[in-house]
Amino acid sequence: SREQVHNFAAGPSPLPTTVLEEASQGLLNYQDTGMGLCELSHRGKEFKAVIEGAEANLRQLLSIPDNYSVLFSQGGGTGQFSAVVLNLLSAHRLANPVPAEQFTPPPIDYVLTGSWSSKAYAESQRLVQPTFPNAPAFAAPRIAASSKASGWTRLPKRDEYNFSEDAAFVYYCENETINGIEFPSASNSSSDSAFPFDLVPDGVNIVADYSSSFISRKIPHIEKHAIIYAGAQKNLGPSGVTVLIIRNDLLVDTTAASKLFCVPPVPITYEYKILADNKSLYNTPPTFPIYVSALVLKHLLVEKGGLEGLEQTNKAKAELLYDTLDQAEQAGKVKCVVREKDARSWMNVTFTIEGGDDKEKAFLDGAEKRGFKQLKGHRSVGGIRASIYNAVTLESVKALCEYIQAFAKEN
Ligand code: PMP
Image 1: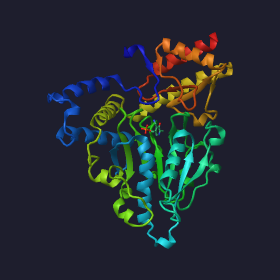
Image 2 (image 1 turned 45 degrees about the vertical axis):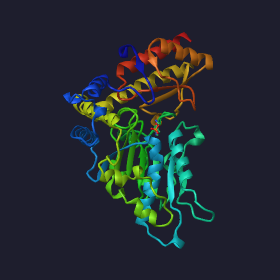
Image 3 (image 1 turned 60 degrees about the vertical axis):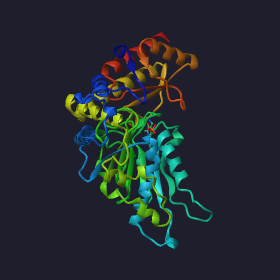
Image 4 (image 1 turned 180 degrees about the horizontal axis):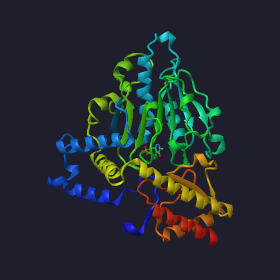
């Protein structure tokens, strides 16, 4: 049963049990309509109330400024790797109209801190290629800072950033789900590893991938971002919906932009203006994931009392687990992947078991027996990853810590 299991999945990941109970009821018979939520029109009054409620609660939870739109999109986080490039190149093109002979591909500044920011960078490079010989590229993606040389075990420091003056945008990933690296929290903004908003030249748009840390704690400086986006399947809901928080001046007509030279057309379901003009209902949205996300947001506001308490709990969970790992590391039993403490993720805790594959297998087998599920690291990096999202309780983390201590003692 659910009570016998501690689920540390990286995503899709656990959701609050009370939310799932309510959702299963709604799936069968939504608010006594005799119809399930998935059987209702996305244009009917019931679903309209769901999506509007989700937006209102998200705005309240994160204190989203009025000049930002909240959009519900599809295509996952990966879809946004492409969508941000195409939409923001259109916005940049419209804002900087020059004749063809004066066009130079604008830089796009990527901050690389792990696997997901690297994938976003690779997609950007793929999309901006010239479409015929001697044509200019649409843009020039570049690396503004990278911690790759460390094997993704730290974040770049302030003096390692090198932003362009005229970038179409700056891109970073707030929490690297695979590597377990996260920018320090708002309460630790003086850290040398904090994202250096003040070093980004004035007027340059900043895009952040918040997929795996969304609504786990306050977002520092929403107002300094152009776009914040997050796939739902960690803290928010089931996979299938991606939330965007976007500054309204970036909702541009990309068809108009594509009539200029050197900016590719944006597929219609990925155009932010189309999504915004249609209140995220241009085409059929993923109604069930949006419904469950709406229930999670209500749960966080009403039952959890907002982000502050949640942030304290998430901090306590992370500190407890890292302290336990640091002690086991001193005893030579495990090793934390992220060497820099300020860069350690509150959501995805990555470590390895000392002593080779047999020991790692013994750790995972023992974990499985005790009900600790989905602890295996991402297939690209191996090792162990304990994801401790909002719905993972302090009790579950305590239980895992006791197991790590017992394992360290016995091995
Ligand atoms: N960004 C981050 C930080 C992620 O963790 C993930 C995957 N969970 C993605 C992007 C890609 O998301 P998706 O699988 O929804 O395309």
